[in-house]
Length: 254
Image (cartoon, rainbow, N blue to C red; front, side, top):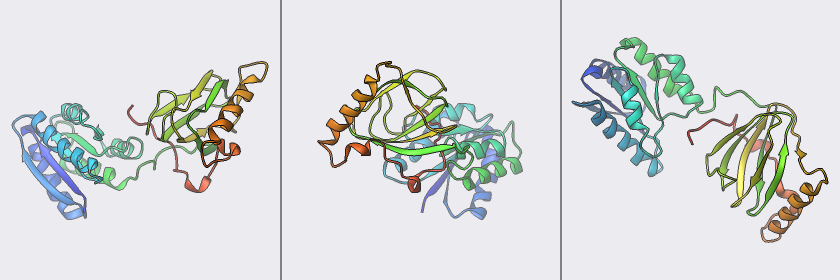
């Protein structure tokens, strides 16, 4: 069973006691009360370190940190790999922290929240699934390209969002995110076998910048050459599988 750690500095100690009791009564998670620390950064380091260790081992542990405003603890916690700390001031912010940012640490301020408000924020954060609040794209697909492929400069009529699931494209690695406005010229180079989610605000289209249409030939030749070394056919350069799609791409810290 996953754990949820709770830690505070002296300013957040009052909220800590209430949050620990609330979690013990209202969640199936293992509640670990780390207590109160003299300095806010000591509490943040302790809890964030435990969350990072859990994530590195494939776990799903979380943490709630409480100080005067939540700001300082958020800054410290976000220095740890695989830790995404969100400082929120109400339940609505907690929903977005979970749905959009996939936050695994919540920081709250005792100067800003009463006990009931803090408990509501924690509940909203725990009960909201990742991607729940993200708008749906009108066109969405999973795309797969072999290593070595290259898309020459091109544009789209509609804006696009891209989330790399595995592999590497241009400057993005796994979980890298990019937003390309409508009409912006861009290109893509696939450094490894790559799978990514792509969403458009309208029907998908592509307009090559090379007026001689050589761009299409270059892309096709490279896809074919790479496919000959992989167990994929050239026509599998873009493979759409709607059954495996997430509900939406989500902006993650890069």
